[in-house]
Amino acid sequence: MGGPRRPGIQARLGARLVRLALRAYHTTWRPRLISVYGARILVPRGVFIPLGTVSSGLLAGILASMEVGPGRLLDIGCGSGVLAVVAALHGWEAVCYEPSPAGRAAARLNVALNGLQGRVSVTGDPREVVELGPYDVVVSNPPYLPLEPRDRLDELWCAGEDLRVLKAIGRLAGEASPGGLMIASLSSLTPLEAGVEALGLKNWRVVACKLAGIDRVYIVEGRLPSRGPAPLV
Image 1 (cartoon, rainbow, N blue to C red):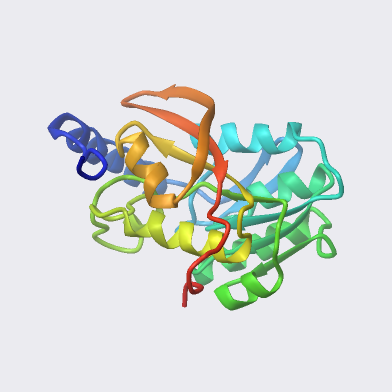
Image 2 (image 1 turned 180 degrees about the vertical axis):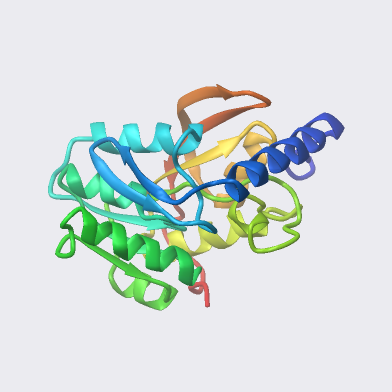
């Protein structure tokens, strides 16, 4: 039956246009405090900017409205830490995983700015992520454009033509929380089914959707494999 559908010419062109727009936005950004669902977030240059981005807003809104048990949350690729901070302000305990030193520094600063040092931890070690699991929810606002990153800035939104970044996120999520719930953002430019397959989600559904100019941003919810492969190293 073949693998997931690859992006067509129109989708690839759209992805390149989105990359250009994001690059322009991020290169002209002046670091400042922003407010996201009650969270005070400082976003330095070189870190993904949640202000004005559809995916960040949709995910933050979902986390702010979820009922909490107690609950433990894992944010993979946390960037500025905005999602974990919003979740923690609404009762969650959170672990942030971010491979970028600049992102980890920003996330730790924002955890402190919101007085959440006892509720949110930040790490760049995938083994520590697994050791601290399992989690009630895994969330990710990942790089999902099906393009090869040309530099560090591109790595904020480009997953590679083979979607290897999404696959790596799915592997880590599955190892950290086998059979757990994952909520992630994806784009119609990926396309959607290919992104879900790369993350490895089962029994998935779209829980939110919004037009973002060129593409349509989806928030999907699904179950991770009950047994994950070796952790990301």
